[in-house]
Image (cartoon, rainbow over all chains, first blue to last red; front, top):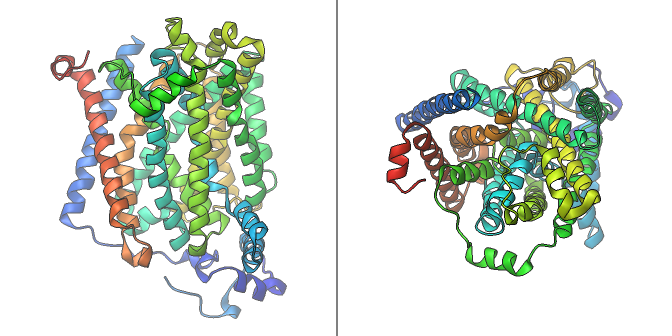
Length: 64
Length: 453
């Protein structure tokens, strides 16, 4: 990566600290999912997988 | 989030410099007063919202609208399509707030906040949806240019060349302006609609009364799903948030981000409604058009709107395919970079963004190559791709809902109650529509029992 020392002050005053590429290397901490949230996520996952099977079935019958 | 300790420890990248130049112009415009400076600020800050909305008016979406007009004419679907764009505004505005508040892309936030297990699920949804949609974009380009006698291989090459040309500058700003200019051609459907001489009284009546309402059948349900999928899809969430971040928008820009989103939705809704009006004469002539490709719609419309109008219609389909190919392949590349923590920005020079540009190009080239395989029946992919988008939307919306209400990353910018209620209603409606679709396929008798035909 190239350093742009001449522009540094101007760049740092123009961009917010979190906008710098270097700042984005810090990961945002993970949060714990609650029981209700997990239940919703799993329900929608099952729904999506099931619906994709339905779409694949319809695709197969249409292609026959 | 942690701020950097001091200037000396900060290394500045090429990407930072380019973004700072863009931000410098915004900050400069913000210091001035008056109408012209506000107009300049708007000019500088519009982009992601207009691009995502006009990008979603893509090949399969325009074909869905064309099929809607041909199958149902002027009636229920005119206000319905306008309503779906209102829904898109509510959903997409959340991505503007998320991007501006966190400066992180959507895929990155899902991975970081919920972990790789849920992150990979959402990436698989996005990857499959994007790739299927990309195939249909090249089908639209092939069919649209086919109307002018351009051979398929040349049509695909032209599309890939335009996609590559938009990337050549390695500057987000230039890419955005080039793509915006191309996206403006989506409005070509408006003069086409005028050429079909719509009955404005019927149009007004449809908007006021939502009449005539089509019968509840499997075909109607498929069109409802396709029209919803033509306005809200998972790639739009990922794209607008990543583009908001790449553009360098901050919390001070959210108001303009909202204007950008509403403007985009208004333009896209106008083009969508125009497409329904343009093909409504086919309904009057009782023409069966459900399996039409772009070129066939143009040919069918030729007796009604003339050769010039039909050519405009075909060109509109070409534009829809090309702009969507650009935005969708970019959304895939952003998401890949975000989850692998590799550089991901349109401000990157080729040397620093090899993986970003490689993913973007590979997605587009692979989809384009599939379209060129002789004898491969892809018509059904075009019809089903919007349905797949609707089915994948509820899980994507729940992630969005959870992120935008996460006070640790959003602070005071969490969603207000009314926005959450609308988001919950959208998730419920999309899921219910998906379940009804499933019932119509696997239990047709049950579907008939609840009134379906």
